[in-house]
Length: 328
Image 1 (tube, rainbow, N blue to C red):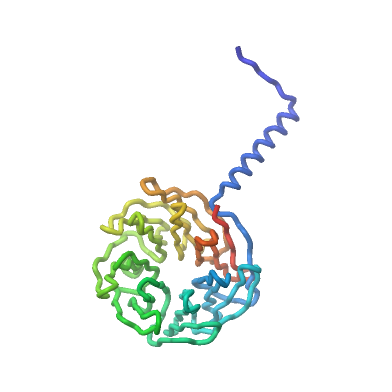
Image 2: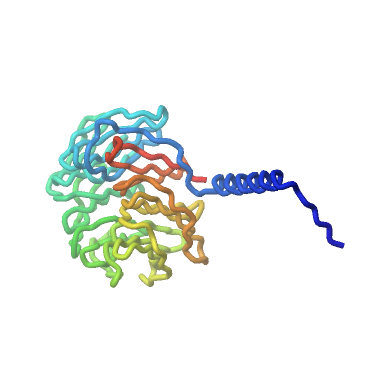
């Protein structure tokens, strides 16, 4: 026997609205990224580049490339601390916690280590110095510059070896003895032996182009590369260079992060969004969310320890800012 229950029209409308609101609330709560705050950088103009974090000091640093400065933000208090260093076109940043060094790579060709704002070491002759990566296990610092990759002694910033590349290195990641380098000028990932400094392989991405951002899933031997022409996320096998999967992505990606705990990829795009991609091993790449940021916000930093993604938004109609997203 079927039982049909009739509700008065107003009650029915109210029930539907309540159900819709509950569904929306569940969906919103389940969003992989949730906006958690904004810290304005009121005096900062022009392009912003890479970020670094001092976890112990709860301080975030952002390279204000156009302003020729490195700016600091107090994450504990949620406030802008002001300029912490001057530099000629600062681009790449890294923070070394043992020595408490802030490492700054500048387009003017200088790489320097600062502690509490005071110079500790510096090296010249690295034109267009850009991305930095610390290999703390071997006390090495990797720096991309001009058309080369440099490996430096982290204790003294002495250059140990160089690797000539077919173009300017953008993002790079290391797995064991190998470093994978994005070289968009040739539309390829160049594989470098870190011990010898020699090129081992060159994995073409053609006809895709504009491969600037990269992230690594070392456990499952997957390399994620974001291209701009067209805007695509490519998953590659680090053992063979084979392309495993592709997925359409937000445009103008400049930073890419892999969240190993959640098997997600976060793509920070200058079009004004962060794409959250499900990259579960064995499954297809799937877009979970497109979180809106701000036009020109191309760089960021994902910090697993704080479960937060920080995005640097340059000044447009409102002041420059650090946008904070909480990982759910």
